[in-house]
Image (cartoon, rainbow, N blue to C red; front, side, top):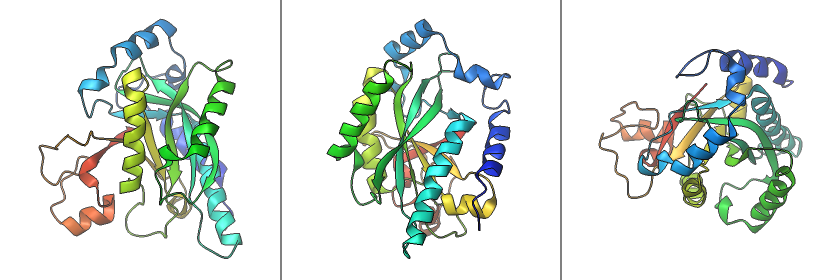
Length: 253
């Protein structure tokens, strides 16, 4: 079936324009900011003392469209070769929001030229790091935001549950980036896209996450990344992977 990216993007734009989670009534307000206020927020870095400081993320409709297009290209490329859909990855450009500090704003995304990386920790990949550096330097003169996260696809067969979760490898990657970036005023975000479920449902299926520090212990037993309580271990595993207590979900505005 053809991929109707426009329909899914329209759905994302409608969702993004609603005022939820303390979001401003004017959706465009998320994508303008005061330089001095942002510098002050980066310097104070209130997230350093709270493992679940961030509660939501605002993603621009154009960023959603670019992510979905990239993730679906991995599906098509793999199928055309007669195999399974290919996992893809990219970087998020954005910043924390000085007006609502517990929100991370994603303004743009940039696909990375790597595929099928789930078996290794991406933050250790020299090619990825070099590409990030080169891309970052080219953007410094034209953009005020920074690379503040990454996205990747889980193009697994459509099942009862979404495949938007962090694997053990994903968490290792996310933790390395949080350790490297968070202390310097640049909190890092992870987004996971389920492209096949997006196709089946007709709207973007994606979720945003942050990892807990390894020394953190959730005081609520059997709590899942979305805040729900699931006592059955097998069900937790099916919905959230083997490391469900190691990360939490942010609301996507």
